[in-house]
Length: 214
Image 1 (cartoon, rainbow, N blue to C red):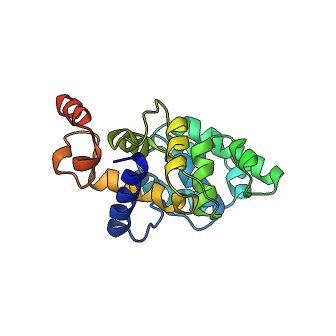
Image 2 (image 1 turned 135 degrees about the vertical axis):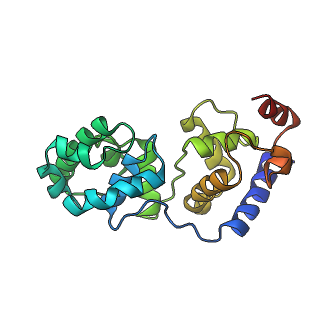
């Protein structure tokens, strides 16, 4: 089976499992989505959704966030990982957005914001603006390797590989479908690949044996 044939079969399975792909991070504007995605680095979406309601009560727009002291922001997000650094970035990002005219569908602009990398910008571009992007997180990077779709050593290279095998029109949906599948059916540890809906046929025997030894 070629990589393209494998990718097509995987996509059909994911479409059956996840015909709709709601964004797991709670938000109500491009700005609140940007903040939520930035906060999600090295933290679960569930934990982010626990802290953002109180954060957005005080700072739902850049002007309100910029007016808060960093210590107040940090206290509001203290239960998530890297809170001190993220608090500083939230304030600086808000100031940058005020100067730059708010959140815009501009790759260079978004990636220039404090605390916003390529993955965060990709989520906002794809999920808010509908611009084709393929944000790759640790779930996608791991599964792409398990399924033999990429041998890349980092998420940037994995993104390039996946963009080559799937049609651009499917990227925005697929990246969420793969994340959902990884969380619900294909965990990093204690996973029986021989019984997995996808790993059982997409993974090589070598990969299955390697995973069993972990």
